[in-house]
Image (cartoon, rainbow, N blue to C red; front, top):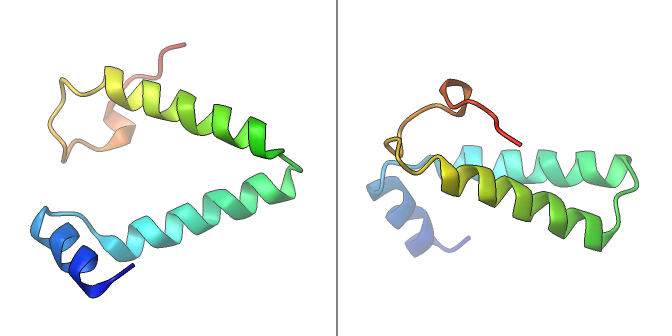
Length: 70
């Protein structure tokens, strides 16, 4: 991540350290579960879909406050 990207994220109220750390944690978990690239892509698409359906909430809403729907 470049310094410019980092500054922009901070200006948007995002924590770049947490984002990078959790992305790495997710990747390590997927690796430990022997997930294929195709499966990983499907997992990310499902997560994106869940988040898109939750866009009626404000961006600072904690994910724990959003109900998980199939």
